[in-house]
Amino acid sequence: MPQDANVLGTLFGGQMVSWMDIAAAKAVHRFLKGTPADAALTRAIDAIEFKETVHVGNWLNFEAQIKKTGRTSIIIQIDAFKETKDIDKVLACTAMFTFVSVKKLDDGTYQKIAHCKP
Ligand SMILES: CC(C)(COP(=O)(O)OP(=O)(O)OC[C@H]1O[C@@H](n2cnc3c(N)ncnc32)[C@H](O)[C@@H]1OP(=O)(O)O)[C@@H](O)C(=O)NCCC(=O)NCCS
Image 1 (cartoon, protein in one colour):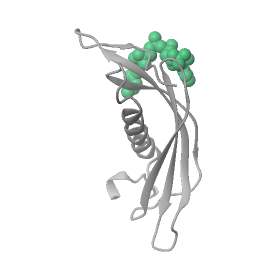
Image 2 (cartoon, helix red, strand yellow):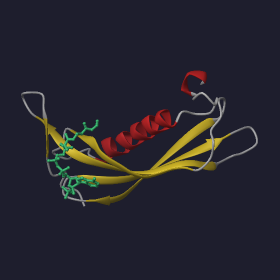
Image 3 (cartoon, rainbow, N blue to C red):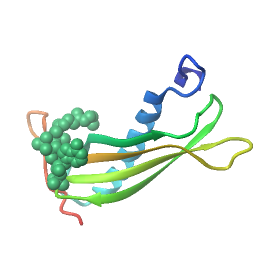
Image 4 (cartoon, rainbow, N blue to C red):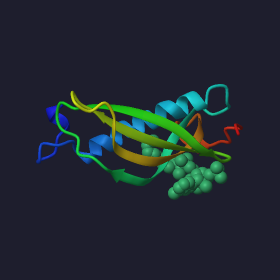
């Protein structure tokens, strides 16, 4: 949408990161079902690459893949694919998100907690 564009009229990179963070959060939400964790917080975003320009009017589809898990960490690769009238699927952006599983304390703060999943 026009409000997501930068001064060049293409997608603002920060908006792309925000959407990718939401896609990663959704994948982590599913991963944490049935675990002692209440949620997970974004701890790091690595290896981000903007590979293709996205224009106003293009569609974006996000794919999430859990690559690795630790005691509290969950590492997810997010790929954002551009779709246009002429192009079915081209990789526009990729990044590796590290989330940490947390428990919400009574004072409203979050503390890391093992998610107990392989
Ligand atoms: C998330 C948070 C609770 C983690 O608590 P912490 O005591 O700092 O714990 P650490 O980050 O040192 O370690 C937690 C895990 O993350 C991993 N980790 C830490 N830094 C990392 C990095 N830069 N890249 C990849 N993994 C990392 C650690 O190895 C550890 O993994 P493991 O438990 O699987 O072995 C705390 O750092 C925090 O609140 N950060 C702010 C989160 C935030 O506001 N995010 C944005 C909005 S969601």
